[in-house]
Length: 349
Image 1 (cartoon, rainbow, N blue to C red):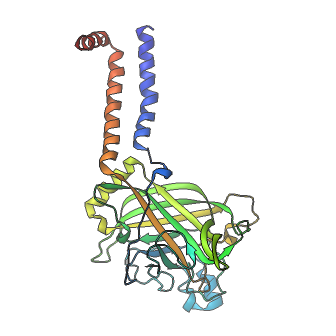
Image 2: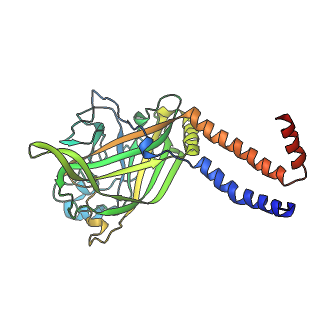
Image 3: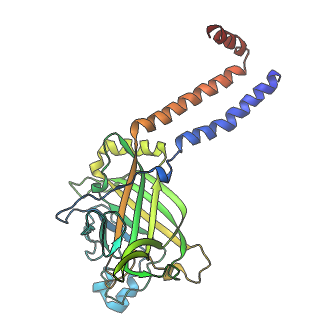
């Protein structure tokens, strides 16, 4: 190989392989089977600890409820995104506090076993009388804010992944029921700093957005049905956000500037649409959080996994250092200095 050919190959290697290598180092995430999930909800003996609140319950159908039920209910049919996390002025029936469910160990909640401590939240239109729910909240957005009480990360660790399990425990169905469909949604997770001493506006410190996440509204769990425990199918959904090593470090650095005890996490699912050949539309689709006073409440379980901060730092910084050495070696190899340098190293070995 002559030097011109080698130099051309070296340039192509740097131009093509370098971006791929940088992407591999900064965008690496762990595998699901390697994650050790930790419940985000701790024991709450008094049942008063605030974990989650509604932020937005879908499209605004206030005009329909005002026309059919009167303004007393219509005013509470739509939860508008608040300008601050005090959520003052929100309808208490629809944006109520999510308290920890009775089984703090996550064993049995409403006869459903999901194995994770859960909180009970009012359904999207809990203030609407039973039977008067329009039957849809549209395709979104659906948003919930999770308070700093869920930030239970140990010192020396970085939050790697977050997972939410939504389930409507009021009724189970045949696992082949037409109620269950494949769907997709756009996801946004926003970490927000909030000064709890006053109702100051939220400042956003970090955001992760994922488009067209494929999912289903079917959730198989162990349930006490017909006098015995068995696998049953409920309307539910699992939502997961995975952070790359770079994102883990960036989020932790920003959150540490304010203190994790002031950081709220806002989850938004929007643009829900069906992805199978069902005759339904998204307005007819059962969602675990949707319903009126007759449906009552739904459950949210939240978990997180972490990685060792020192290991993530070592992987990213060590990887970029080795990559720099490789680029430098390729660069030197394309010059007349390579042979003297190589001979010098051989003489030292």
